Amino acid sequence: MAEAPIALITGCSSGIGRQLALAFAARGVTVLATARRTESLHSLVRQHSNIEAFTLELGDIDSIERLKDAVVKRTGGRLDFLVNNAGTHYAATALDLDMKEVIELFKVNVFAVMRLCQVFVPLLRNAARGRIVQIGSVTRDVPMVWQGAYNASKAALSQYTKTLRLELAPLNIEVIEIVTGFVRSNILHHGLYAPETSLYLPIKDAIEQVKYEGNANGMATEAYAASVVNKLMRRRVASEIWDGAMAWYLYFLVTFLPLRVLNWILYYRFELGRLSSSI
Image (cartoon, rainbow, N blue to C red):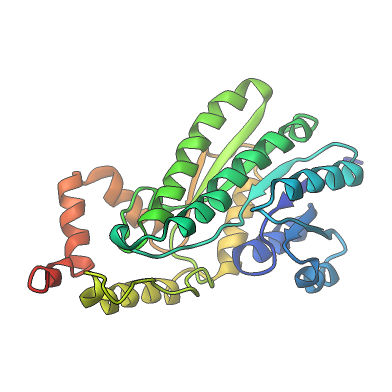
């Protein structure tokens, strides 16, 4: 009897990561779920005997090394899926950025992912068909106003993923990017940052409305995770999977519309014209 596939998933304490863990486990995959605090994973572990909890602090390189040691000990050095889901959000305009926040954002959303891929490729090579799965965002292509740094982190992740895909092809490791549209989650819980002196305060209410409507009308995390995992479990998987509410609509906009037209649509969608009378 073939051994069950093993998936390491980051950021499983809530939201998309939690549902990905449940969806993989339901398909018979042994899930190594990570979070900063393993206590937050107790309910997951209780739900499925094939979900196990591991500690990971993405901003701490030593934590990644300790995770590798624990996974090697648990699996004997084999891993079928590395799912880089964990990430953080920071919403501020380009003129109002706190650079310390930007650095922390890139540490989690980009640099930690790079290190995780480095560390776990040797384990993926020991699988019959190792797969790295990057949970990305449509904002890699769509310039969502008031979150330029976050958009940039997802664009950086995407370009890194494209390059990694080529470099790992000779090693028989597939690299898949999930280009995520609107999904109901708590990623926006920090809200929009703006100092009292911000030039963009007149449209803050409009941006908040767009973002929170998108979140409220997004795909349920359970449905999103089930859809993604169903695709990932196939023998042949596309290099990019667009999923989540409005993902294909946004794909059409960024693929077929001239940039000038796309910018015009977004300019009016975000009510940027209101600033001309206040600046």
